[in-house]
Amino acid sequence: MDLAVAFLGTGGPAPTRLRGLPSVLVSREGFHLLIDCGEGTQRQMRRSTGLVSVDEIFLTHSHLDHCKGIPGLLKTYDLNDREEPLRIVGPLGVRRFMDDLKPFVGRLGFHVEIEEIGDRDVLGYPGFEIEAFETAHRTTALGYALLEDDRPGRLDPEEAARLGVTDGPSLGRLQDGQEVEGNRGAVRPEQVMGEDRPGRTVVVTGDTGPSSRTVEAAAEADLLIHDSSFVTEDAERARETGHSTATQAAGVAAEAGVKMLSLVHVSARYHVGAVLDEAREIFPETNAPRDFDMVSIPFGEKGPPEFVREGAIRSGEQSDG
Image 1 (tube, rainbow, N blue to C red):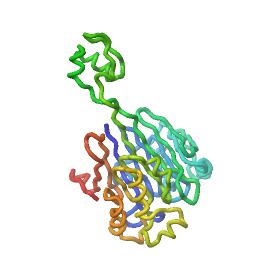
Image 2 (tube, rainbow, N blue to C red):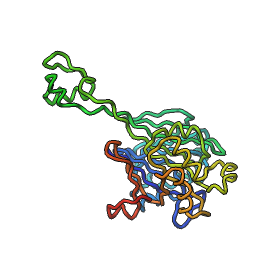
Image 3 (cartoon, one colour):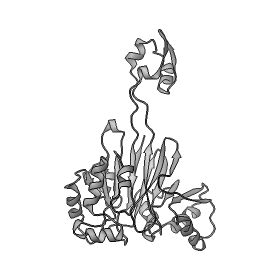
Image 4 (cartoon, helix red, strand yellow):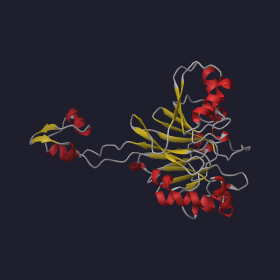
């Protein structure tokens, strides 16, 4: 079952030649979730994944560098005759922001639903849920954790056979949590199934200072995408503006016990290599994605998350970032 993250915009509050404004596309088995939509996001899509018809857009907050790309994306969807409704979710203030955009967007041929949520609110989907968590920014802001449901443990076919269950339909029912009849009476799933296997978790903070809520939401996550606007020498500036240093982001990742940390929103004033060096002293499994890089997240038993550079996507090669 596919779970992948495409980095459409990894820059800070102003775009540069190499980095667009914040936007992350999370794809899971045909479901496409766009988290933030900075100016130019639709063009970034065309240059990487193609113009994906996203199912939902989640905004971390209403600062323009995170949402100014919405009007253009909506109009392009309309020109492409989109009919499916689109839900835009975000913290308090997103509804007013979208209302202010109406004169510029005009009438659309599909319905746009706006939903405001808060800290610890959970939205459910088939096979996973999305939990919002409050972040430490200068305005009302949320991060989001995509949490897959746990999966059933592995079936022990030898134990099932010993209990007289060998036919496919009965084994399938055991895997679905149902009791079946064996040669020694009823056979319960817990007799032949291993422990449940955890689903995967992807966490995106948006703009934030280091926060205990992020640590809580990202506990044992496969991937944490965290604000890293500054380096340690500018820690005071980070505190004043509601952002994090690379060291602080790495500290959050280490405390949460995540498998991989991706640093985004890096200020153009820094060389990314220096930012990475600072973070990796605290948390070695850190990368700093460029626009169009990706992370593929297999199930835990199949290995750790895989960081793939844009150039390697075409060649099939991988990079440790």
